[in-house]
Length: 224
Length: 367
Image (cartoon, rainbow over all chains, first blue to last red; front, side, top):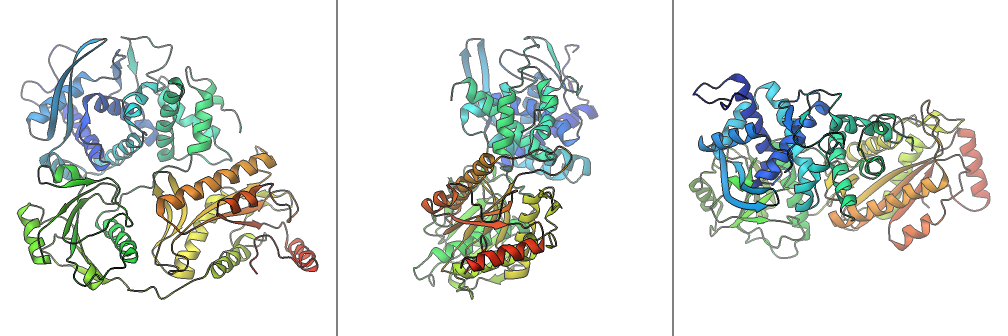
């Protein structure tokens, strides 16, 4: 990062535009499953899982690199996009809060789409490649919505196999774009080997099962 | 269950949790809700049929209700006095009189507002004022037992259909039993069955994906061949998992109401080169899981009857029942049926003769 924000300076590069459309599609998926307003914490965690598991749907990882942050998955560029698109009137900010936790001060907010944001999504999904990504993100949001309670929605993503990899220290770079290092996708893929019979588990089932797996690990860790 | 070569190599992955997830959650993935206006129309129609069947009061004075399709109901109704309905089920909704609903396609998210309008025209004007006049709308007219789909908004043209007042059919449990038995005879009882149920009949190795194939064909058989009714749903989603087959209210008539069918295959061998085997205990566990699933789906849908149909491909004689299972099902009011799959037609004939000699029937055969 050269200190300049992506897309700053008035010229929007295609890559930045693509990333913002991806964000709108993700929020559309969240709207469809009734998870709006979605907190900043959950938005980043869902975005992380949606990034990590993209290869399950045979899609490229749109934002594969992030630093393993002590507060959990967090994308500064995504937050920049959220704030910028909100000012453009496509994302609604429901509330803004300050809070202090063991790591210091933290600014939190809740997000959803505006009507204009929905209209942009409607236009965008008429493109075939966008439509595929949209289907995937709706499915990821649907799997996320099936976490059984708020505790799981907040913390189950931290049990993700890549993020929770014991060999990966804090403040080091996580690279999801390289399948060899993307333990999330490998774990989801390994489920086929565990199923009874010789039937492969379909990508959609792999995605949902992987979310259920994270919740199970969370429950186990908290002694439930 | 086999060990996973890949999973054991992944650092930090909880293999036990992974195994348990696959064993217990596979099959619970919710059905996809992609479908658009027609899927929305189907959801509301199903809802309306159930709602009308639950009503005993006079509906002749009821004003219409309008359902508007939205990809984002919460966003659509922001600041306009709508209330989120957390449990939108036909049995819990007392009145639809002059209600406006803004809902997701499968009615998983519903926001409601009671309007003061006394006619459909007033209701339409109100929708226009709210800026929702161009939304796909489904209009329910309880007084006329009719429902309409307006693809271009409430002001546009409407495809209108009637909801029959009384189902023409009133099926009894024994009749339905005969249908299930006949399906077994035609499709799964012998190696020549239309479903081609065995990979190697003599060695009693069932065909791959047998449970799913039985589900698909039984659903097709009931929906298109026997009843010709769209209210027979495969893989219907509930918060407790997907129902193998759900025969919704209105298909079988008032005596049986709606029913859910949970399907299981009992086996000793798995197909393919792995040669994996299943013990009797694993079969029992599989069926006990099925009992719980059937009860969950019954409570979720309000179905009158829950069936647990087990297609028996175990390497045992046809009259060998699973220990404790019939008693457990009886105690929990689940209708348990075990349909034995014979390795050959002569074997079936011999078993039928032996049973007849004892004055008995084959497993699962109705009287």
